[in-house]
Image 1: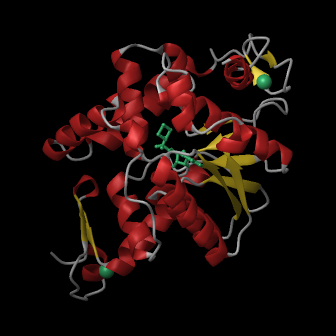
Image 2 (image 1 turned 90 degrees about the vertical axis):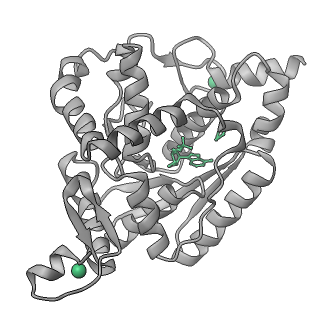
Amino acid sequence: MNCKICKTKGIKKNAIVNLPSYNLSLCKEHFIEWFERRVQNTIKDFQMFTKEDRILVAVSGGKDSLGLWFVLNKLGYNADGIHIDLGINDYSKKSREYVEEFAKKIERKLYIVDLSTEIASISILKEKIPNKPPCSICGIIKRYYMNKISKKEGYNTLATGHNLDDEISVLFGNILNWNLDYLSKQYPILKEYENIFVRKVKPYCRITEKESALYTFLMGIKYIEQECPLSTGATSLKYKKILGDIEEQFPGTKLRFFNNFLRKFYPLLANKITEENLQRCKICNEPSSLEICAVCNIKMKLAKL
Ligand code: AMP
Ligand code: FES
Ligand code: ZN
Ligand code: ZN
């Protein structure tokens, strides 16, 4: 197959990727151009941030977040990184190494939060708090530190590498269960809230996992390919597989599902978001729906053991 853009210029060049949902085949050069334009347009369409904003990218060491950190800097944005070392054996060790190496390469500031010194590693928490799934504890802790460090270090925007496949698998699950509360918060940009929550953005929300992996690979970025060992069997992975099967039969479904949710359904819920129960944790002063936040609660539980 030949590159469609090259063809319009009268050049015959082999395509390296076929994107059936856009009816597009592209050579390396035009894929890179297409990808970067797509990220740039997403940032503009959702008014995520400008060149004046101070952005902190949450970098896990995987293809999405490392690629995102790279592309934001390439596009001229002011983006540093934060990595949470989860302490999940070799997986976390390797992830941290990739992130640290990459930060040096692009000469950007990197903040590391080491859970084993801050609270306890996820491996230990999994054993000590067996009645809660480790992924849910992990999610709570990650969000807590990302928000806290962003504010403390003076960043007004926190960017994560959630891609289209991540977004629609969560969307799918929330629709199957009609979780209106979660659906009302599922938007590619969540505005800052009274110095309590920093602005959160997902510039890869219209980029598929496959497109993201290809871009990161083409940019020569080394990333951890292994999935978190604690996520095997996660429902979201099963939903991704189902949605992938549908996409194969009906190209463009993923993007349509996501775009139409934002355009047709989200507006019905958007203004229903209330922060009524929001208060500040009595211990750490971070946002919480209860007197004591979930992270301080975990710390207290651990201290009692
Ligand atoms: P996941 O929930 O693992 O699919 O990750 C979604 C996004 O959260 C990633 O693209 C990163 O931006 C961020 N993230 C996940 N794990 C970490 C971590 N350990 N440190 C920093 N950011 C992370
Ligand atoms: Fe959090 Fe696996 S448990 S990334
Ligand atoms: Zn081309
Ligand atoms: Zn607290």
